[in-house]
Structure formats: C-alpha cells, structure tokens
Image (cartoon, rainbow, N blue to C red; front, side):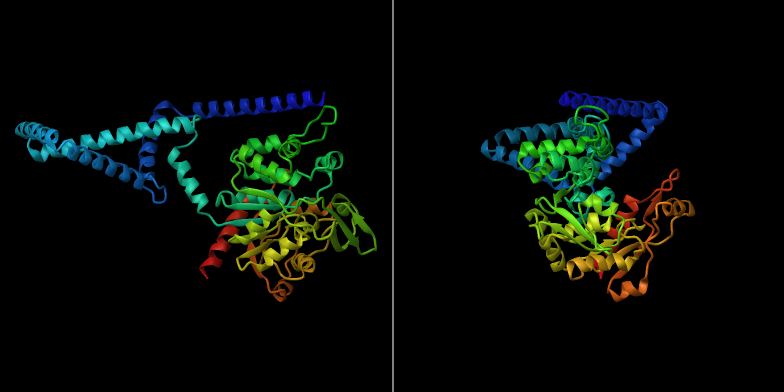
Length: 476
C-alpha cells in the first residue's frame, strides 16, 4: 500500500512538472513574431561563432592539429606513390587555373576561390556542430559553445569548502555554484526532527534532510529537483509527512550500503555541480547544558527548551571525520563557515575534532557568515562577537580570520514580524570583534519577502560578496 502511494505521488509530481515546462515553452514561443526570431537567430548565430575563438575551450588547437594531420596524410600518400599521380594532378589543376585566369583575372578569381573555400569550411563545421548539439542538447536550450565555456570557467574556479547545515548552507551553495564547480559541502548529521528524525528512529539511517537540501541546491536542474526533493506526501500508510528526497536518500543508502555511497550515486543521477559529504558517519546526537542547569539531549529539543546555552557537545564524543571531508579541507583554496543556526547547524560539524583541526591548519582565506537575526532558544541577545566566541569556545582556537556581517538593517515591517517571535537583528559590536582579531566584511546580502517580510540571504549577492573578498585576499 505504501509503495503504491509512493509511486502514484512521484508520477503525479513529475507529470505536473512536465506539463508546466511545456506550457512555459509554448508561451515563450508565442510572445515574439517569426520575423523577429529569424533576425535575432541570425545575429545570435554570428555571435556564437566568435565564441568558438575564445581562449580556454581547447577546440582551436585540435582543429589545427586535424588540419596538420590531413596535410601530413596527403604528403605521405604522395611519397608512397612516388609523386607520379600528384604530378599529373598538379598539371591538371595548373591547366584549369590558367583557363580560369584567362576568363577572370587572378586578383578577382583568387579572392573568390578563397571566399568559397572559407564558406564551405564554415558550412561544414556548422553542420557538424549542429549534429553534435542535437544529440547532446535535444531540447535546444542554449548553445553547445555556451555550455563548453561555462564548463571550462566553472572548473577553473577556486576549490571551496562550505561547512554548515539547514537552509543557510543550501542558500549559500545555490549562489556559489555559479562561480565554481569545485565546491564541497560538509554537512551536519545531528538532525533528529521531522521526516529525518522519523527515518533515523524507525530505520536507523543517518538523517538525510540537510544533505537533501544541499544536493538539490547544487543540481543542474535545481528548480525541478528542489520541488521533487521537497515534496511531502499527504497520504499513504507511513508516508504522510515524509519528503521524497529523504526517502530517496534512505533507499539509496540501503541499496549502496551506506550514506556516503548513496550521496555519491545521487550526485551522479542529479548532475550535481560539486560534492556533498557528511561531517561524520557516526550516529551523532547533540546535547546542551543550559544556564538554568538543565541538560537537553536531541537537536530538535535544544531549541524548543528556550534556554540559554552555556555548553554544547555530542554523543558519542569526538566522532571520527569522513576521510573525504578531511581531504577536501586539506585541498581547499577557500573555506566558508555558515550561515545557519549556530548551535544546531554550524557547531555540530566542529564537534568532530578532525574537522576543526584540519580547518585550523589551513593557511587559506577562511570566513564566517554571521546570521542576520537572533534565534530564540539558541542565540537570543547574541551579537556578532558572541557568535564568534561561541565557535571559539568549542574549537579552543580561531578557525576563521574574517566575518561577513549584514550592513543595512532590515525594513520596519520585517523587524516587527520577527519581534513577534522574539527574534532581533544580530548587532555588530566592532570593538569586541576587533579584539577577537577578526576582519569585518560589511555587505548587503539579504532579501526580504514582499508578502511575509521573511528574511533570507540572497544566494547571488552572498556568493558575489564572498568571491570578491576571496579575490582581494588572493591579490594581497
């Protein structure tokens, strides 16, 4: 019964997505006249040809190599047959050229033949590339040269390691993937609430929720994959409340043997730009000591306790890190910590000793993206320096040399909305941050929902600011 409901829901969702995509394509075709499309198409094709001359595509060198091969083959054939046929062929061509120049002077016939040859080459190359494009891109969305240029640009991008969890990390990844394909997300596996918590308790798998969000954010077809992975079943025996993405990763874990292999297989299926690793494969459970003396166990219960956290840890203590996560940190050009819930998304990764030790050893740009608003039950009343000190207290040494802080205050409407939930802007206490020997990077990286006043980091702005700071740091 559960499997049947699962299949029906999946089929309905994918069918609806296809219909929506078809409607969008039909609407775009009907918006512009055919004559305008032809003119624009011709202009676009001429521009596309010049793109093939762009450096870094590794196309021009192979075309020249092929042309050299043709000339060498012809020379070898001539030598093999002792030049006899070549001699007579040369005489025939010379006679024809003499007759042509008798009719048309050489200063006219020569350029005409050159133009004809160039046109034939262009025509042949155009048809060749069109045939390849039809196979590789059957939907006709974009040009092959654009795909190649983007591929080369992204794979030349810096090796970035982003550490965190929750919606904050997936938001960051959504922006970073436009600048580099060499991204590694290291994700917490301490979640024990919602669908992830149920799967953890009932099946014994590591919670897949944060990993699911990161995979969807890094996927090429992000919008469709996100809708699919975030889809929650509304009916079905045992399916109600579960997200498709969590069930997908759980099934992959059962098929491949563990979560690490499940993520790798899912990344191939979803054409993920980068890689996602759990910080550890241990069954980690968070605990926190509060100022009133209570000891709370479980990630979802810590926030719900609505106390002031004075100490945080995990069971088992000192879990081993995933080797591939450590390798990514050792090879990183740039390390970004956050954004995300301080005690339940960011710090759980740093409770893995090998993770924090590997970060501390790296002499590369390292930055912490501070949250915009305080979070009730975790960081109520916290300033930027308080966030930094909380991380330093867990790690016993500074892990980053800069902190990114939102520059402008949110609108009055958003402030009122969040004040009703006892959440307020994280204040910047410059003197304390300077005393902690951290550089401050001020930028406007938030976006507000016009309808609800909800605040989120803007993926594109956030990534642009982070990459700009990285470039400036490298230039020093």
